[in-house]
Length: 124
Figure 1: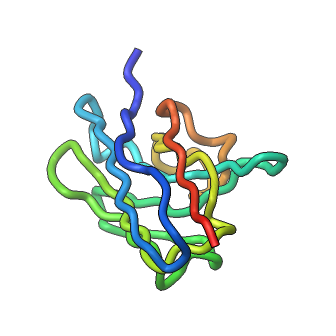
Figure 2: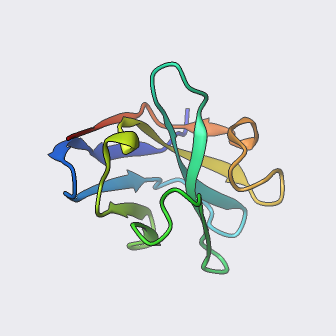
């Protein structure tokens, strides 16, 4: 089954940086958007950032604006650069694909294809 594949993640101290990558070699950029979503223990999965590759439009959660950047690196890989990390950013981060216009950019239920997730831990 086609699904995004994440890499990166790990453990850093408050204020540190991490870069997550998402490979989606099968994707057709005209018909899909790619999002990063995260889930912390005991909390619902939430949208962090989404990019619409065909237009270049990006969307961010208020909690990460100015600190995180989602970008398309090449024809099949995207990344999420995370700077000034905080303990509240600790979560499992997922790369997911959604058919364009099938839902809101941050609606986890609208994403069709999910990666396995990668852990990000920020210590104080």
